[in-house]
Amino acid sequence: MKTSLIALSAAALFACGLLAAPAHASDPDDPARLALAIKHAGEPVDHVTFFPRKRSRSAFSNSWELLGEREILFWQGREKAWLVDLRPSASCRTLDKQFRIATSGGFADLKANGYLHSPNGGICRIDRIRPVNVEAMRADEAAGGELAKS
Image 1 (cartoon, rainbow, N blue to C red):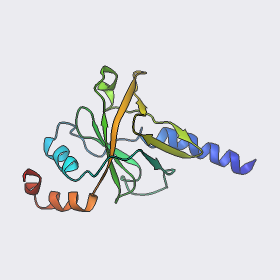
Image 2 (image 1 turned 180 degrees about the vertical axis):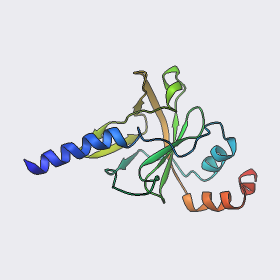
Image 3 (image 1 turned 90 degrees about the vertical axis):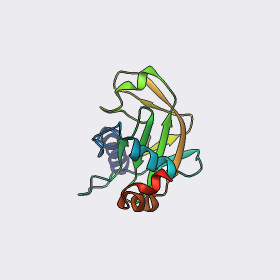
Image 4 (image 1 turned 90 degrees about the horizontal axis):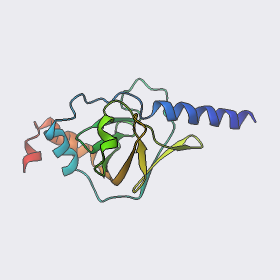
């Protein structure tokens, strides 16, 4: 009973904290940042499982960046990121504020053809999920983004 209560509490905290946390990029209209993420995104995957948020001093522990009108970069720690493309929808216009994903047993899953819940009660359908080569993306950023143009 104690274990299931802990798991339930962790799931509830995770649901509130994972993606309702503030994004660490303040400008969703930064085309260079979006171009870097797209350049370093791999082949689409069916789903991604996020583990419960760990107590960390890092702002990058299970966080996200709104990169464009329909593109979100989800961070799983500092070294793993996923570029999520959403289908066009009027429901997704307030994603810069917050959104929720479903959780199960303390874990949260993003699934291709799944959805996010927007704060206005709408549903934002996920079109695809792609892993991002974070190391290469950071190298391009350090080089001033010049490699992103090539």
